[in-house]
Length: 574
Image 1: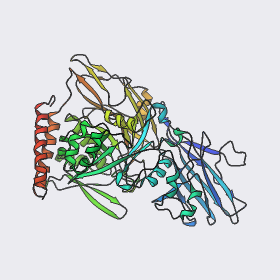
Image 2: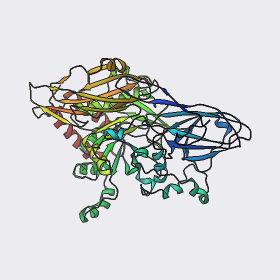
Image 3: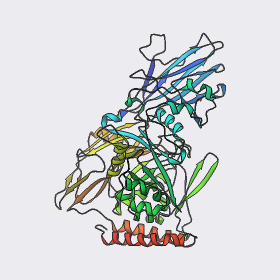
Image 4: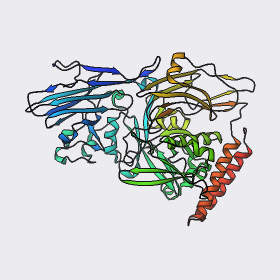
């Protein structure tokens, strides 16, 4: 069996495409199948991967679905779990029998399922064409994974395979390679057993088309921990600093996290992102006014199933509402959820989607408390049992991105995090993060334009305003209707558009960042949401009092009390 590029004049089986999901007005992904046929004339199989449109060689993720025990991984290929990082060409020496495989390049490309039958003394070439299902760049959307814990040389190779435009790499992992050079990839040795003398033959093939493999941008980030709450600080690389900034750089490293966050609003070369939005110290961290983004999709969201949420006994006085179980291989840990949800919420947060639903609800409470925070996503690849870009942030940029454009987009709230559906939304012609204004008595009509590409069935499409459902419909019903019903906004607040899939083992969804609306120049601050944060702060203070760090926390707890008290005084809504 061979899937070949049509320009090659060889007798090969045609690539057969089969519709997977299709609705009117919805961009649909397809499952491409390669027909399995016997291979003849030698004893090896060369696998080659091409872009369907241009014919250029590409890298991809490769997984065996049948026959994996009858073939050895070639020397030089990186691997993670069941996935191989497939170079544009590699040779297999399989034993006889039937083989089936799956090839993926991220959500913008068609999944390829193929197979071949290996006969004795046989040889052939299997050419796999990888078609694009959606061109997000054409609609000004670019992809990013906001945290990976791998050395840059290895992370950038996986980045090519999943066609990510930008990745954020933990700075502790070393020096960043030139994103336009391939030399560093030759020396990558993560889970690769190729001798260095043979690395050159496995050199990756760079595409001249940036839309084919992404923009290959990398951002260093530092995972800074308070005692109970992780913050990622992303900083632009190769920034030209003036003398004063250079002199201050060493001092920044010696400052504690709270001090760094207090200075963050004054800095233009970095951004702080909350990684665990339900952790103990969150109300203290938010009170510094330095947090700009919140990960609502992270390492707890996995391709097969999300990590479970375990509720703690209601009578427990520790302030811990639940724990999230997190695993990496055989290692497991428990992360405490301090967000002070109610007894009624204990009924809501059950089942495989509980951790994802809780995270989203926590984020909505932050918005309702008057904070403008950008939702983001990361895979945690290198720490979590996942792959790079499974959770990804799409950011909106009207020009081809560079690190500064990415930072600007996150700062302005122009994002759509997803671990499945590709959702593109404009409201009244504006992207997420926009602020639309009016005066009392003059409502704002909503013209919502949604483009959606899906790979699996979607349960429903929602429009959420201030935490309440403004519109909800089964996706098929919505597109049979052909448009949104007339919708208006009559008060200040925030609005998100989201789609949730039918995936049963976790929260697989996409959501826009908030669109903001202000009447009479007055932003929404909910009294109830602020009181939620104050109760959370009280639980955190109680837990901190029992630790040796009590004295170090004292000034920051006092500042947090002041901040949330002022928010309560400025509340504009119940």
